Image 1: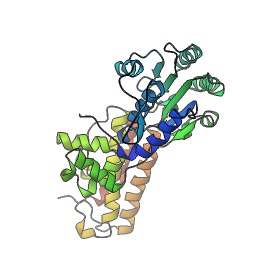
Image 2 (image 1 turned 30 degrees about the vertical axis):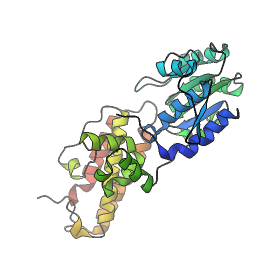
Image 3 (image 1 turned 45 degrees about the vertical axis):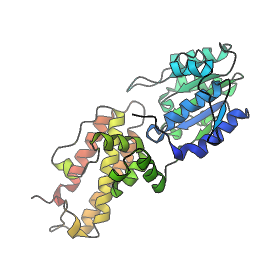
Image 4 (image 1 turned 90 degrees about the vertical axis):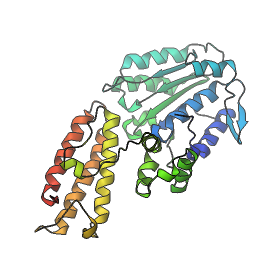
Length: 320
């Protein structure tokens, strides 16, 4: 895919870039992990800016020059003053990896400038690794910046959170997301009912539209056993998001039963139907939080929720 820009990140980037330029950026930074809204892009921009020898201004925004030795090393993935760590899929982040970064930050920068540490999925640190990191955050060496990417700040130790500048990733507005899709040549294909999903996961929706494949899942797929299999945590979250969207749509259409092709009240009251849908929706909200916890088997949790929804809603399914 061609280079992607994220206009809704511009105000945030301007603030961060100015802090880097003025040497006022804290040594510990927590970034909300929203890769489909541009969080990974933001982190990489910060790394480049922190290491660049000759920052420039483009469209009134400071940025790395892209051509100095430091920028070229970062682009090649071989800069000696950058270390990135993350847990293996389905595992926690062990203390040995965190201790290795502690040794890294104590060394003199190989290029004589800043050192940058990036920890992804930081909420999956073990208690021992979190306490090891805390010691580094309490007395960070000069010219060292530690960036933690986490899906939920609340899962980090309070003592770690207190030493971070926490950055949340903004959602694009409806107008911004429409304009963004038109810029990428897909505005005419973005359906009104997909706007909320596109705001949460713009990259996924853009890729779906470009490839002609949709991750949109209807509730009847639950009953016809046509759901895709969740291979990992990210896949499970996408399926949960899509089914929550379908449940929310069912909640909205309950007010006009004749327009709802899936459900019928039959001898059961519409109140009971609404309660069943609400119960499935709330269980899905809880599930979305649980699948992000360390050590959780996201595909298994997803299947349990699907079975629960099937049991709750089967009495109302319109069999044709």
